[in-house]
Image (cartoon, rainbow, N blue to C red; front, side, top):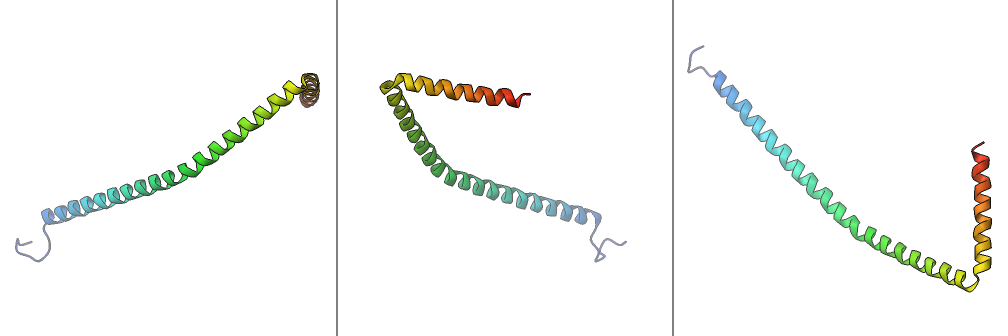
Length: 99
């Protein structure tokens, strides 16, 4: 083919392909950065309520623990008998399950 023909040369085609590949790579990198930013924003948005729920659950657990300790101190024998009864029942249930 003559050099001044209207069809692109091999070098021009290679350059066009390289330019297209570079543009595609830039677009993919841009999308990846956007996706990462969105994920981080969503995770940051979830961490606040999760922390609130964790704090609330921790407070309720501490209250329950204080209540149980107070009841045990008030009536140690019934508390020990209750714990023994629960242990026996659990032991029987677990022993029956393993047969």
